[in-house]
Length: 263
Image (cartoon, rainbow, N blue to C red; front, side, top):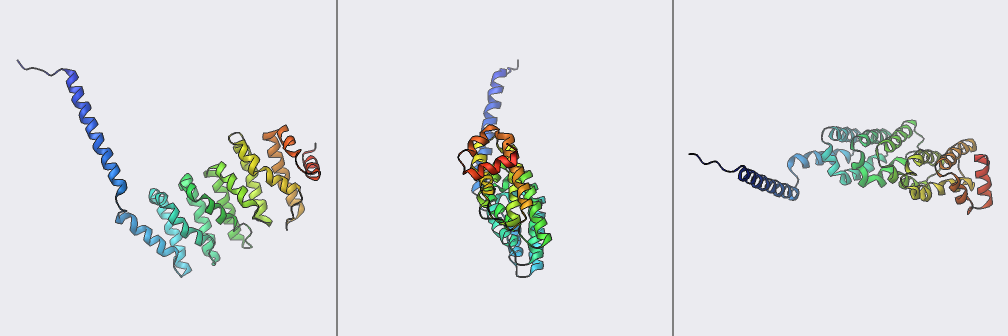
């Protein structure tokens, strides 16, 4: 008679094989992490860097197109090397040639939607690069910067963005100041329920500064519209707490707030 092995022994054997197999896979995965970058990785990256830092503006434009292509076809490669890559992108966002600068902002707007939070390690430079172009007298550059700003709000971490907008706000002037304030207003409703302390630390000072008659080289009507929207957004989420926070502000700030909100 043929002796059959108990079912349990088969299970044990299978379990051991599976465990051994998993162990090998884990070991191999760890080994892969320590391997140097392959030629398939280094070649396109080096090509990208060479194009982006070329002397000819047409070649730099080609580099930006190649960056977008890599983001679309090999997003993991770009995400893994985003810090180094962005060092080159920042240079093109501030390029002396308007066509290159606008193209860089256009490409940035597109890759924000592709890479999303993989851009978190470079969010400081990203926000700085965009906001530096919001006062551009070139309509194409300004429009591209606004588009990149909108894409940031749609795809990047909103709490981190509010922090960065708050940091940058005090360094801005003119239209850039209003553009960023409008985006802070948009973020208030989403951020406050999740991180009220972030709104109080980064959005409230913006409101107090405006109400304290911060000088702006723009028409007062534009300023009042932007400030009214910010105050209304804050009052909507904070309610009477906004009054309590305003109590510690100078009398003219409280009066301006009351005038805007109709208190």
